[in-house]
Length: 483
Ligand code: ATP
Image 1: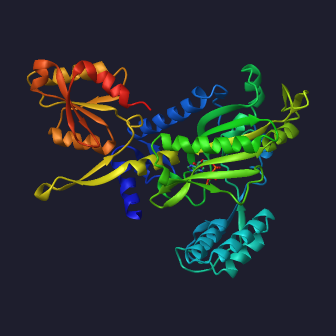
Image 2: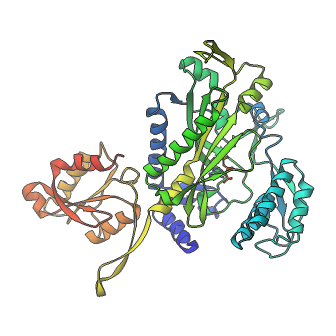
Image 3: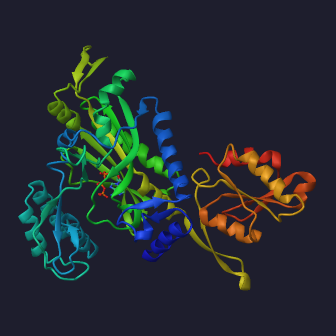
């Protein structure tokens, strides 16, 4: 399966989905660019998320907040002081690791060897030490467990140190006294600080949500597995504001809604599972991940967190601005609920991780044909709604007016669908190329087209061909490319 993952990474590069950033200079670690097909697939995923949040829920609206924020924001959120990762370096390999990940891997090892109790105890001990911010204790645990560097194989470790994930930069000219500001490490805070702006101007009534898609930046230490963990990535987050005490109800509801959503966009149920957090972040009273089975195992793609009133309360303290909502609905005593700081249930999914999950799920190798004719075929089995290109239009040959006819069909469809026209190479080769980028329909214009205005549609997954009228193309494609 590691092998399959390697193939998927090179496929993504070779066919214009994902390139290493600034590749001509040998790239920049954990930063990637989306190519001509990648950006279409990613946009399709983002649009689907956006629509299902804001259009299908009449009480969810969107915003687009800036990446830079007043630095006090990050003090309130805990990112400046308390949000650090415990890191440890191996002196031989010079590799840096997250100490908790090393211990977690050891616990996994125990578990796989059948020693569930030992795994559980180790995790409990680690969580207790991390909770108490006992870095020396974490170091001792690594030594006691004789945890070795996966690269050098030695246990020659440095102390455990805290590492802040936030990137910083300076505002103002360098000559002047410059102030440090940060690139946001999560999009959520842009929503919290705007909570009352949106509530008042949109006349929103609790419960309501605010959705946002945007870049986030984290100076991840262990950046690996392609676009799974990047230093610049995109989040799709929704903060749902609710009455205190109702958080478990909404937490359960969003947990299920989000799980179903991933299935609806084509990730199979058997490749999805929940992973409940035992160790909770300082702001949460319940948290669960939705994990997808990547070729390298089940890993988080989305987090659903019950964030209590932590963020709004902290912002209220630091800004001295009221972050309260007046709820004039009546409670069971017939009195208005009155003023309160709302509780928040958040859903947070990485656009890039969802992209990777979609790509891994779509990548298909199959053997077609029989006997001497047998050959390997690779294609991306993407839902037509997600496919970067919906249809490719091919004239069988360029002469005798076929090219013009195909161009005419291209012009007919291009206003509604992302389609391409291609007349180079043999038609078989053109089909193969479209299979590799996941185009669900290929439309061939041949001599019969010139006589009766019909074309053949060739379907990506079955490779079956069907003769249809040009007039019917638009509706036929339209039916397939929506959910
Ligand atoms: P992880 O444990 O994998 O670091 P996290 O728990 O820190 O993730 P959250 O802070 O809950 O992640 O962020 C929500 C979502 O944002 C994650 O589910 C993931 O899809 C995405 N995400 C977080 N960090 C990264 C990253 N470095 N690169 C790509 N996507 C990320």
